[in-house]
Length: 303
Image 1 (cartoon, helix red, strand yellow):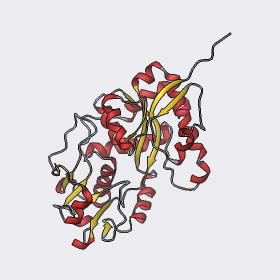
Image 2 (cartoon, one colour; image 1 turned 45 degrees about the vertical axis):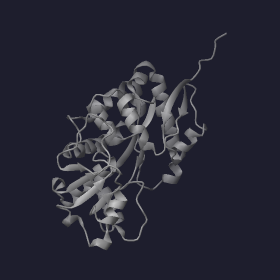
Image 3 (cartoon, one colour; image 1 turned 90 degrees about the vertical axis):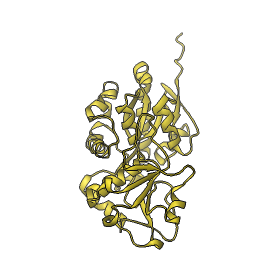
Image 4 (cartoon, one colour; image 1 turned 60 degrees about the vertical axis):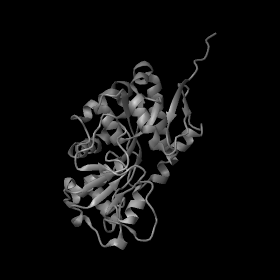
């Protein structure tokens, strides 16, 4: 009599979204794996441990963190699965009580961002430069955190705020002229979007680029990919099933959940280019180099 094979237990860090809820609740399963979810809140606290020391078998990760990890040859493998994406032009705000500010008057201004490597910051800077012609190196960039990768050093036009400082109090006090925030965007009178009619601006950006800016992807350790390829395939399949479970409610909307190599190729190439332009990567990367890590395992199933 054959003994049933036990599923491989995988330590996993993944935020609860509509498309991951059934997976995290145990409603979507695969006999090859058992995902053991760690309670990480906010999810960005998982990124540095995963990038630096592979603290999880499977982890959500900001796209800039992943690209830096890849460029520094960390043993993490990208699955072609975007689990978080959003339009970004409302994410840069200013204190209207201290006077009008717009994209044409940012030169010489102090703009705060949690870390120069933060993915939201990368996207806002890319849009400022590409769409509005802003010279990024003419802005005084102020950060409160460093990179998730120890090896990375900020460019010379970036400086760290004094220890203990936080972006919103600095913005209110006039210590910053503007600030870039993501999920922590405040709903506060006087703090206004720097880009006028950001929603319309985002629609125009989408019409030109045909994708929603990528925030978070999913990675696995190289050890898992090498020693348990079936488990890696199972994880990807579970993510695909989670996306399929919310397909009806997302129908007709811009696709924020890009899955598969072909869907990701163009957006990922442009994301890499933006990162290179902003001095975020220590070496050149290509989409083919990135895809090679998982293509042999996932193959046609992830086209």
